[in-house]
Length: 208
Image (cartoon, rainbow, N blue to C red; front, side, top):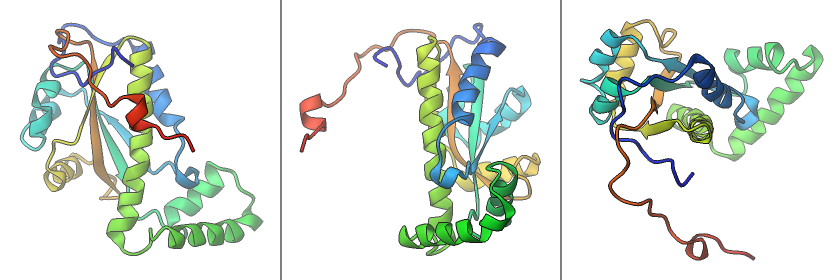
């Protein structure tokens, strides 16, 4: 983790092997999420034409789009209510809950979402999904660092414009998803010029 940093520019001639990138994706896939809902999807953008289009709507990612071995857009699922078609289907086909338990579990999910004010409006509901994507993001960054691969998490994009582009490309499943966060992976072109800075453990951690 001391070696990991937000890489500014990648060595465009070095590519991550399929096996290593599968390992990184698997870290995201196996990540925990609230209610086990997995309200995410990972778009691995390798098409140079689409990367070029993204530069206009993701100004904070231009150098990474140009040079990173792999570039990921993590999407957040919209409208993941306790009674949504998505969540009910997920409970049956992924979590394998018995049919006769679905109503009870759905009611428990309702109480949870109400108690956390997740159901206040569409924004709070979609923000809840977006929060989950950052768990997957963190695990992918850490998994990459563990095998010597560099990474960069990014929020430097115009949300509406990126969604419009991805929707036009047929990648948001009729607006069922929205772009949450970006991540580049590859090998650094050069080491950072400044050492890593973080708060001390004494300032950060309080034992009670």
